[in-house]
Image 1: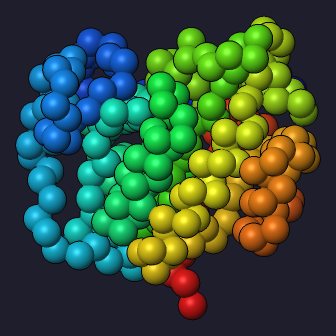
Image 2 (image 1 turned 30 degrees about the horizontal axis):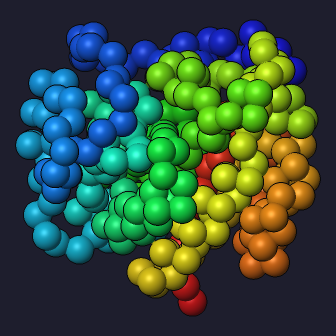
Image 3 (image 1 turned 120 degrees about the horizontal axis):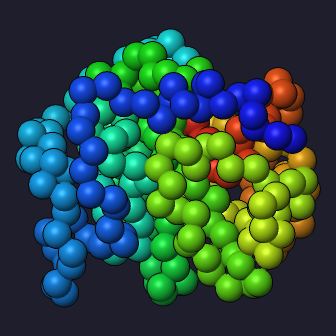
Length: 266
């Protein structure tokens, strides 16, 4: 399906007020201060923003729901890690990369596990929540620190591919067909096995924090491809809820990423 009729919404999404253009994102590298090896410097604006938003050590509180809530003592996700990065500098500087502290810990531990299993593979975090939660255009959810969009990992001719990862907010407008192939270049496709493995490991780490995956939104036509993989079959056995019915716009926009809502284990 073409995205042209959704272009106005996507352009609004890509526009961030009050921010000047900084240098493009560098390749993913650690910003946690614990990496021993030398890594590329963060853009000055990012370094300053991180310094302005330190972890105060107070526990996070996610009030209300993902679609009508707020976030208290939200934690800023790292802009980079050893094998991951945040997808867009403007989004980051506009307070759209905050989460509940327990979610942050689970996500980072998951990336550490993925680094051991898939050394060299890179992953990308997309939009999270505002610092204090509440509405975050154009998302219908993401309001209480318990939602994250994760960019789908890609392959090109069967090999890891990162050529589309640095598109920023316009990445949400990429179009993949029902088999997970990029419509502009069919040699590029979604790595469904790795996506499913990520979700499996994430669920494991969430459980350590008293949380779980409450809901996954992925383009409906892609679920069969995901569940057909070895890790996808394991994922399906867990009974994690995947959205069953989506309107045309929401369905179309959830092929380049998978949206995950988290919730407390009851």
